[in-house]
Length: 279
Image 1 (cartoon, rainbow, N blue to C red):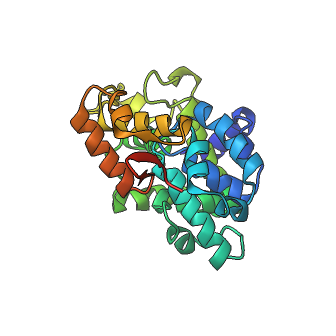
Image 2: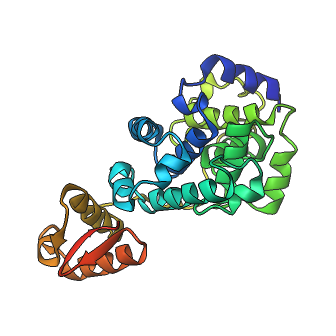
């Protein structure tokens, strides 16, 4: 693979995203928000958060209920709680500065292998191996000749992708991620616009369809939608009774299950016979 071609493409086509010109804390906030959430939904919420809580210290001093409310409709609100918990640790253990070391980053709540590598690359220009879904799909097609990667990276995949990292590894991570998001997309990739199309193994083999079963992203009627309905209602109201919450959903047993899991996750709490966002 000609890495320079891709790096040049990135220089000419990268989006002007605010977290590409921010503090390490701003990068960290963006990485939490961008997990399983598209850029267009994250942009306004990220701007609001950075205006309100521009440092870990500021977020650490916020009430949990404020944090959950400010997360809005990004989904997976446990991410907001983990970010809040991480902010407190950064203040207490790292002098209000996001740590640069990958192992230290991984010690923070909500920071796994990918997120730690991404923060190290995008906040501190380190040549870490960043493998998000866009990057893995691009490599699967261009290098391996298959439509989609496996559900999670193997050690062999990590080793092979590490060999592709050029000297400017941080820029490489950003470029491959951007390319997967804009050109080598999951559906209807823009193959004719691809500067690497003559090198692409998937193109050379005739674009074979993947035998992997792609998981659908069903939402209606799921436990996740039920949980989201409860959290949103409690964002809009100081507290609500179980009866009122059940009136928002067609299945009482599903509401009861959702209430239990939301309490266990630290997102809501009981107050007498009512429920409210956790404080």
